[in-house]
Length: 380
Ligand SMILES: [Zn+2]
Image 1 (cartoon, helix red, strand yellow):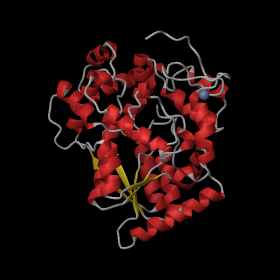
Image 2 (tube, protein in one colour):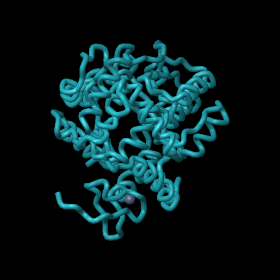
Image 3 (cartoon, protein in one colour):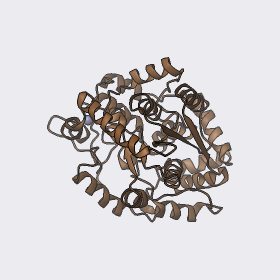
Image 4 (tube, protein in one colour):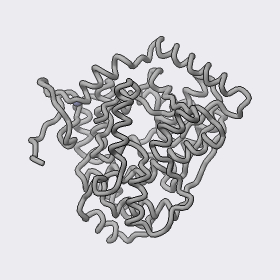
C-alpha cells in the first residue's frame, strides 16, 4: 500500500491514522459529513424524542406485565450505562434488571459507582463472574495473536453473558447506553473496532495460542444475536440516550449530585485492562489513538472544542510512571513476566486478516442494516 501524506480533518481531529478516511474539498472528513447528513437529521432530543421515549416506555411496560422485570441493562459503571439506568428508571418508569459482568478488571471506582447507583435507585443487580482462568487464557491468546482488537475477549464476555441471561429469563428488551452524543464517530475497524462477536475468529486465535479449553466462557456469535435472537426470539435492543438531551458534563454532574457517582478521567476507564489497552498498548504498539474518535464525537456534538481536543491528545491521559506500573500489573495479573509481556509488545503486529474470520458475512449484514436505515454511524 502506498503511504498517503498526513492529513487531519479541519473540523474534528480524525486523521490519516485511519487509512480509509476520506476528505472533501473543505478538508472535512467523512465522519463529519456522515454526522451532518445522516445522524443529525435523524437525532431528536426535543419533544419529538420525549414522545418517542414515552411511547417506547409504554410498550415495554405493557409487555413486562406479569414478569419480574421489564428489561435488562448491562451496567459497567461507566457514564453511558449509568446514565441510561437513571433515564430508564426515573424517566421511563421501568423496572430494569441491572446486569453486570465481572471479567476480573473492574476498577474500584467502577464498582463504587455501580453500588451507589443500585442503592440510590433501589434497583436489583445481578452480577455474573467470568471464570478467571479461561478469561486469562483467552486474553493471553489474543495478545500473542498480535492483533489490535485486544478488547474482544472482554466485550465478548460482557455481551454474550447479557444476551444469554436475557434469553434464559425471557427478558425481551435490552436497553443500552449506546448513543450518538459521545459515540457518533465510530472508531475505525483498524483501530481495534472489530464489528461484533465473531466465534470463528475467537476460536481460531484460541486454538493457536490458548492453553486450556474454554468450557464456560460465553461466546454468542454476532449472527446468533443479530438474527436468531432478534427475529426468532423477538429480542429488541433500544438506546434511550438517543432521544433525551445527553451531554457528558451535565450527565456526570447529575449522577454525582444525586448518587455520589464519580466521573472517570476518560471513556472506558471503568476497566483496568481497557484503560491500559487504550492509553498504552494501542497508541504505542499500533499508533492508534482511540481518544481521537472519542474526542471527535464530542467536537461534532458541540461538547469540546477542536483546540481542547488537540491539546488533550498531545499527551497520554495518565502519567508515565503510572502507565509503567500498569504494565507490570497487567503482566502479573495475566501470569506473564514483565519481559514476556514486553516481548509480545515488541512482536510484529498483525490483523484479523491473518486468522479465520467471518468479517465478510458481518459486512454484508451491516451494509444491509445501513441500507435499511438501522445503522446511522459510518461503518465502512
Ligand atoms: Zn472530521
